[in-house]
Structure formats: C-alpha cells, structure tokens
Image 1 (cartoon, rainbow, N blue to C red):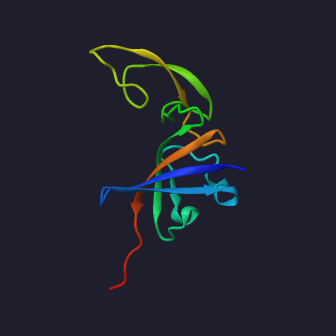
Image 2 (cartoon, one colour; image 1 turned 90 degrees about the vertical axis):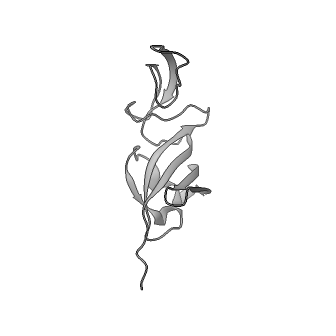
Amino acid sequence: MPKFKIVLSDPETGRSQKVEVEGVKATPLLGRRIGEVVDGVIIGLPGHKLQITGGSDKDGFPMRPDVHGGVKMKALLAGGTGFEPKGEGRRERKTLRGNVITEDIVQINMKVVEKPKRKR
C-alpha cells in the first residue's frame, strides 16, 4: 500500500502544511505527473484544486519534470531542480527521479491552484 507525505503550499498566504495519506486515499495519486491538477478531496480539502509541483523518493532523490517516467536515472545537469551550480558553465551528473509518482515516492509537493468560492 502506498504512503505519501504531502507538503501543501498556499501561494496566497505563503504557508504550507504537511498531510499524510496512505492506503486507499493514496492510490489516486499513483501514475500522476508533475504539473497535473488533482482534486483536493484526495487529502480532505473538498472544492480545492491542487497542482503537483514535485517530490522526492525514499532515498531522497528529487523528482524532475523533464525526466520522463517513474525511473531513477543519472542526468547531466547545468541547473534547475536537483543541482545548484557553484560557478558559471559548471555541469554535473546527478541521480534524479522521473516525473511520474510511483510507490517509491515518499514526499509529494503540491500547491493550491483554486479555492472554493465562498457564498456572500
């Protein structure tokens, strides 16, 4: 059974919260990709729309949007997620995880895209 720690960020308030989901509630997230928008009912926020922004696997390797699939691989990076170059033009080979959520993923980062409309 999958178990995920979801870090949910709210860009309007600048706050984030951690929510843990496992079992039946976590299965709708399997197979989703970075950038997809999911319904907030998955984590107990009905009416909210959440966008998957990233995550990391059980070994701490970050997910990267341009690595396709749910595989772990080594890629030559010049910057971006997973590598911060120390000098101009520096590149390095780093181990990364693909952009698909699998059972090896432990943490999923999400942000609130749409909140429910309040009645006036």
